[in-house]
Length: 344
Image (tube, rainbow, N blue to C red; front, side, top):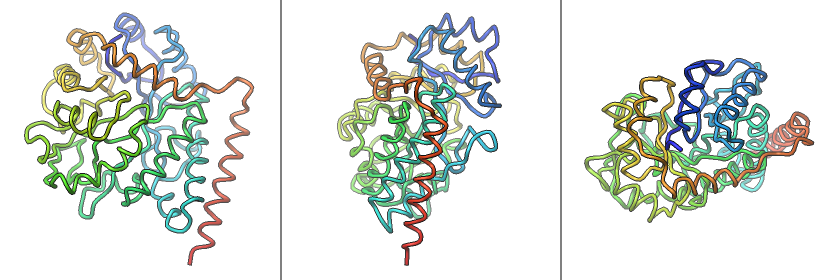
């Protein structure tokens, strides 16, 4: 098994992709807007991926947080609120906000499961700081570590009930970044004491099945390498201090925060301690380069993958997903309305 998660070119697999994926056996795949047209088409695409690799428990990922980060969009799919909506509800009624979050992410997860998507790159556990870049913004469950942890846990639980694995991100914390890592490498100058605030939600959810790294340089921990490429941060901060022992994936290696070729960055991320390298864009030259350069997935990475995928079992065929989702969303909306009506 190749320790890579690959993107795809279009709405269906090409013959070249089928041949390459069958031969290279990547750990999983990730879908983006260019791969999505309709429910029927996405379901056919995910089925073809499983058939090509011969793995029923294949991780097929998507970024479906709700709010502005959503690959499955209206009118084909319902819209879901951003995480900040539930942080606002928490201020009025924490227990009701937790329940509303669970309902929301179970309903969201059912949309994914219905078309064969098994992993959601959510929830965001980053804590935005005043003056930071707004790349996180309303994607976060607020600015209080306890709130973020409790609502993040509810999101993971909701996804799991829908048969979908959640990915906590962006470990060890993206909330202080003054730049968008899609375009530049953020440098965080906060000291270790201040950074402990950012770690708290990740520590509380250290038993999460999967996590995604941050392409951020934290001067207090490593003055040369961003977290994705830092042996020190992955070993000492993520694995030991936070205590995360699940499947650790890099963020997309084609982001401008990083410099170098995608295959070289993938190898560097694995050497730093990531279990799997994420390459989102479906460029055959980059994927072939990774297949030529990367070693086989380690025994520990395979074990973590198996444990992660077992954390959210697929739903039985007898479940009426549409009817169940409708009830979940109705209950969520009733709860949120009740919370808002009770606000002073």
